[in-house]
Length: 169
Image 1: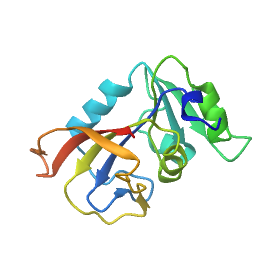
Image 2: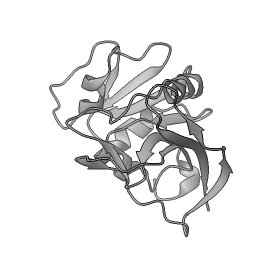
Image 3: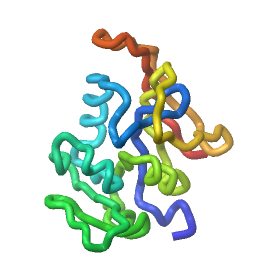
């Protein structure tokens, strides 16, 4: 799998703070209902790939109406209602080649999929957060922003955010 064209369509979807933060103690840093609705709308009916910790942090497991693919270093792990694999390569093999699959976390999984992904759906939170998990840098040499929404403000917590879509150059 050395060339981009050999991979099925892989897209990363993530919410990122201004300082690159995405989580702390295996939890999200904010609650944005509009981001969660967008996530559900975009990923429903598709495969979602995630690390074991992300899977275990989900409020509802497996995510309904999606093929859940969980990557774990432990070959003895098995997650009910999900496909369990032990490597990124194995995860990619389980993805359908005729439709988009979505990488949903966590930090290590995002880093491993950045070279493979062809698109990024980003929810940009316009504020810094204290965190222990960060998203890799999005290099303008490798990624082009092809869509950016206006800046929204969440009515419950006053967080400012926007939706961006990047395409690999």
